[in-house]
Amino acid sequence: MDASFYFVEDENVPMHVGSVLVFEGPAPSYGDVIRLFLSKMDSVPRYRQRVRSLPLHVGRPVWVDDDHFQILYHVRHTAVPSPGGDDQLRNLAGRLFAQRLDLTKPLWEIWLVEGLENNRWAIISKVHHCLIDGVAGTDLMQLLLDARKDVALPEPTEWTPQRSPSQLDLVVDGVRDAVWTPVKHLAAIPAFARSLRSGSELLDIGRAVLGSLPGTAKRLTSSAAGSLNGPIGPHRRWVWTKADLAEVKRIRKATGGTVNDVILTAITHGFRELLAKRGELVDGQVVRTMVPVSMRAENEHDRLDNRVSAVLVNLPVSSLDPLDRLSTIREQMDDLKGSRQAAGADVLTKAGNFAAPTLLALGSRTAMRFPQQLLQTVTTNVPGPRVPLYMLGRRLQNIYPYVPIASTMRISIGIFSYLDEITFGINADFDGVPDVQVLADGIRSGFDELLAVAAAPAE
Image (cartoon, rainbow, N blue to C red; front, side, top):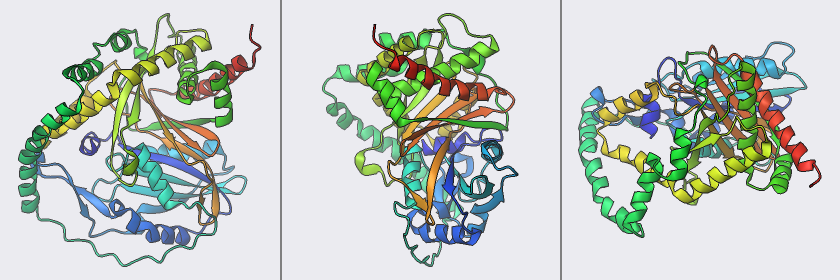
C-alpha cells in the first residue's frame, strides 16, 4: 500500500496528507523551530530518508538515507497578509497543499506561519501518504509536540547517513523480492485458512468485498450523485468547519447511534445542500463515500506506515428528514461491522504482495486514473488527543486536517478531534468545485439541524 500511494502521484495528484496547527502566540523564532525539529529527528528516521525507485520497477521502491539532507529545505518560514484571519490562512494552506513534494528528497515539509490575528501563529505540515496513514500521522504529531508546556529539548545528536546501496544491489534485491515475496505469502495461505472458523467465512469475505451481500449490493446499485465526479487539475480549494464534541454527544444521546454516525449524517446534509444549490438533487440519490478503517493493532502505534482498509457507505442526500438520514447511516454501519467487508478489503490489500512490483506500479496508476462513478468522496475520521499539546511552550489551539483527492473524486473530507473540538478539512479541485464553501457551511448547519431535533420535546 505504501508503494501504491507513491506510484499514483503525478502533476495533478499530489499524494501527501497534511494539517494546519494553530497556536497561541507569540510566534517562536525560525531558529527555535529548526532546533526543535533537529532535536526530534532521531525519533522519526524517515524524515532523513528519501525514496529510490528501481529501473522498470523490478522491485518495490526502497527507503535510503539522504546524503544531502538539509533541515533548512524542509522547515520553511512565511507569513499571511493582513488582516491574518482564517480566510488568509486557508488560502495560503490551499496553495501550499496543491504543490507537490520533491520526490527526490525526504517527503515532508513544515511551514512556520506568522501574521495571524489575535496574537496567533501556525504550522502547516505536509507528509507524503506513502510514509504515514492517518493514525500514524497522529502518533507523529505527538512525537513532535509535547504534553507539557515546560519541556526541555534534547540536544541534537550527530547523524551520519548510511551508505546508499548501489544500483546493482537494488536490482538484485528487487528481483529477489519479486520472486520470494509471493512465495512467502503463498506459504502463509494455509495458516490464514486455518484461522477461519469455516470455509464459509472466506466466502463471506469475498462476497462482502465484491458486493454480493444484500446490503452491499444495494449500496453499489443505488443511484449516486455522479455530478460530483470528474477530472481534476493541479490546484486546490481547501476550507474547514468544526463542531464541539459535546454537541455531537448530545445528539447521539437523544437519537441513538454512534459519534461517527452523527458525523456522517451532518456530512450528508452538507452534500445535500451542495447538490440542491446546483439544482442537481433528485429523489433516491446518494453520495457514495469511502470510509477508511484503521487495521492497526494496539501494539503498532509506533510504526510509520500504512495499515488501513476501507468500507463503502451511501450518504442518503435525497432524504428530507435528518432522523431518517441518521437511521439509514446507522443501519449501514451496523451491517458493515457484521459483514467483514473491512477485513475482506484488508485481505485484498495484502494480495498486492503477490503482484510483481512492475504490475503493482502500473495497476496503482491505472486504478487511480480510470474514470469511475462508483465513489464520490472520501471521509476519513482520525481521533486525536484529548489533552492539551504544546510546541516550544505555546499551546496548540486547533488542528485542521488535509486529505488528498485523486482519480475522478473531486472532494475529500478529513475529520480530526482534539480536546473537545472536531474539525473538518474539506479539500476540493479548484476548478471543479468552486462552491466548496457551500459544503462546509452545510456540514455545520447539519449539526445545527440535528441539535434542534435533539432538543425538541418528544411527542
